[in-house]
Image 1 (spheres, rainbow, N blue to C red):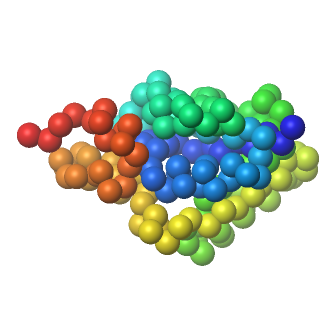
Image 2 (image 1 turned 135 degrees about the horizontal axis):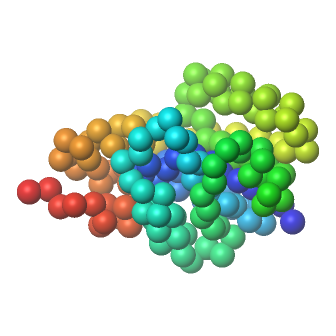
Length: 157
């Protein structure tokens, strides 16, 4: 079984993330959208809320499930028997950063392969950091996030 981990903070999950998962579906038997819990980051949304969004967004896709984990991504891959890590690339600078991480992961466990998918051009500017800033400042984040996320946000007054 080809199990793939798509790791990230997903704070919140964006249309760009959803696009990467949907385009990766034909490549894998199971995709686990893994919320990495990083103690050095202060997320806007709880891990529970982020998991709820993932489950709602992909409720009709049995090959996708959500999970949260702490520690090394490679260790979590080993726990869930994932031999692939999925990463989305928006810019060349993303690739340079992601390749460094992929190389380190390969050194830690050479049975785990990192797969890069480039984002659709329409989602290139969609980043969780930007979306959080829009939400914090009472802007309309709806062009960047799935309906499930938008519906659960406090209404702008």
